[in-house]
Image 1 (cartoon, rainbow, N blue to C red):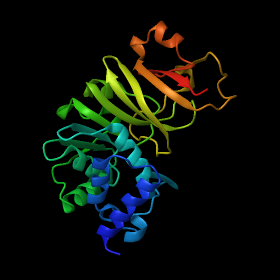
Image 2 (image 1 turned 30 degrees about the vertical axis):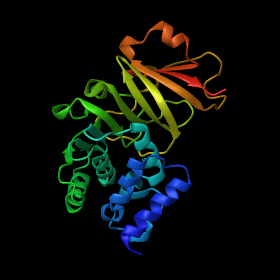
Image 3 (image 1 turned 60 degrees about the vertical axis):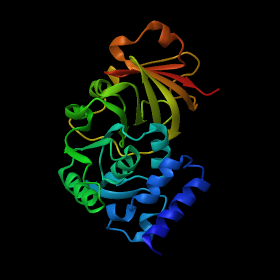
Length: 278
């Protein structure tokens, strides 16, 4: 089967599954040749709806190309529009950066940051070969973002995080959106899309997910730096889905906001006020 047909089938499969609804995102998936970003597998396997490991270390996967259905849901949460300035954290294969470039268009900007030098080189080669020379691939620690070309209208994080670093706050425009796979100890791991309103991030959608952890110099906060308060549930004893989240810089957290939440998780840089599904 030709790769154009494989892309068409992928789009149709994602639409039937309910993972892909927006026409612009469908066009992006129909335009980017996914197999060119994972040459280690055959073409048909490249278009299967599953994540594929692209780098292992110490017997563990440290980088992968994400499942197309998950990428579709996250891109729809991000709501990238033509002309947007977009920062991606975690380049991996470069495939998602290409999708973002399709969405941002020729008048937009896509910067993608990757901590692994070999993946930076790999992504650069694949992006250039597919016509995405305008995407800027930066070697760096994703926790720091990339201030040199900020601020950004959209930030898309392609790795699991347990906090929203101050750099991401500084580099996100007011009214902009950030999508990040979060694991803050409540409800498992989920990709949360937020819109920024001043010093608050308010969730616009939450999707269960599973991502490789964000790598870099910074590590997850030790337990003694995490404050959790539950009004109606006891942490660790009852599994309830997350309905919505309001995030604020920890230094700006107000008692009013905290009192309205079912659960509050205070990480070093961001405090998350979580409402649980009933």
